Length: 103
Image (cartoon, rainbow, N blue to C red; front, side, top):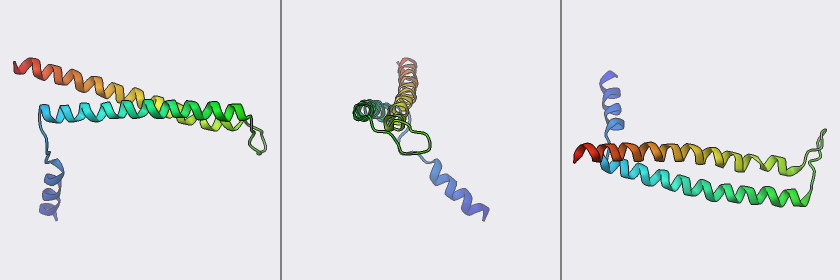
């Protein structure tokens, strides 16, 4: 019923952290995302380099180098790096703005 769905949405709206504590947590999470994407970007680059050195081809109608398929990893992790860095900067800006207005 309507009352039950309202109670369920109240549970989802409740936040455990508010204000600056939530911003610091976001900044920490986005920092981990940047670090993780850098690590996996480097690993993806190394995988592409390895398969490029091997020189193997896929046996399909069109012969393509296998390393082309592995280009998705560094590309995807670079995009993740850009998004997470953007979120990190936005959160940092909001944190600095809130600290400036609080003092």
